[in-house]
Image 1 (cartoon, rainbow, N blue to C red):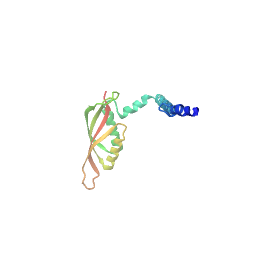
Image 2: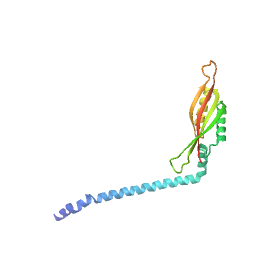
Image 3: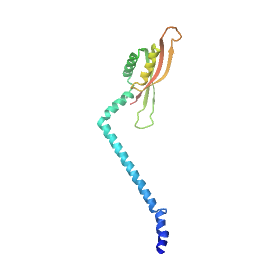
Image 4: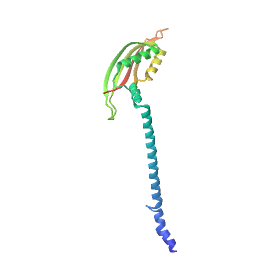
Length: 174
């Protein structure tokens, strides 16, 4: 009877109690799971670092500089516009560029973003304009189309229209 009394009053409460064995085992298992998850995360990060080292960070940097160049790079932008217009049978009549104010970045590692406002006067068929707009939006350089105005409609048997297109091209500021 004494053994049963000791078991019920002394051992059982410490086994199931507030700081009992079950809680300590649960706490140990959760800490063990955290350590295992952190080790897995370290292994994944290590493999990513090795992958970038083997592929070369310069290639990634070069690709990023094509998307968002380090300066306005107007000659390259003009070359891209000319190439896209030739592929899509559009004729560029005139271009104008306006440099907008820099947008400050929120992070300390990110440079301010500059914007070049482009105004293009074009002419060509409507189907060619659709291809031009699609190619402009999927070009390697980051470009957003802001507005498009179509002139010359309402004339029978005329499929050539005049277009005024306004777009923004972005760059990193030094």
